Image 1: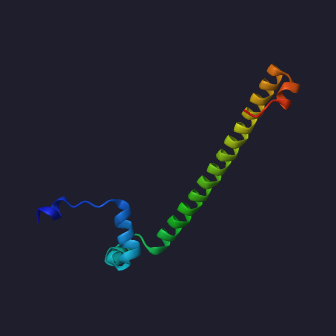
Image 2: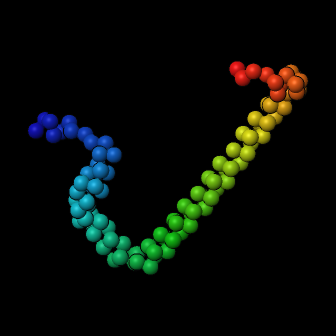
Length: 101
């Protein structure tokens, strides 16, 4: 009994058990949740909510993509700026004919 009280399980293991090994373990809870949704607020409201959440997720993904592109562009600009600084410091002949170090 003492071993059962101290038994802990992490999220990844729980997810694997519920999704891959024993998918029906959560079926009663999911059925209960769906019944509550249908009886309390209604399916139409939840469908609208799902569409809202999907649109929000898509907007966030687009913003993340734009941020990543801007970051990559800025990184490229800084690299070019640094190369130009090095070229001006050592001269273009030394820059282009230097040994790879």
